[in-house]
Image (cartoon, rainbow, N blue to C red):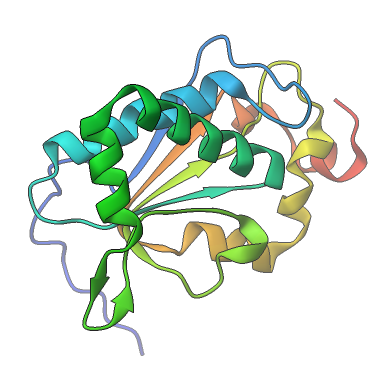
Length: 173
């Protein structure tokens, strides 16, 4: 028999957030506006981090992963303070375990956990439901949504909740 404990405290902010990125478009298997937004959020995160939280970024395709990596590199070239934080973060360890920033596509993230996980869906107004094909692979989707210890922040440019499961499976809107 399962007994559920009463919830004793409310979190300051929801452990799951969805940030809708206006004007994001799906072009060549990537969403540049979404990737830029993620880099800006990463800059804010490192500037305001208070409790030494760890962070990672998951994408649902390699093209989006590479775009985010490239935009991080571009920002490092323009912003020495951000570059310094990124360099320190990439080699960060705790008790011999790698806990630094990573940007990985969904197939590469198995076993990696961070306090905060940013999930780049890259799904946009001009996307077809087939771009959510990973939802047909529940094990991959489960990996993505269970990697955060405390908070998952999702980034989308289209309301994915209006897309029916049938549309995702058949590719018809």
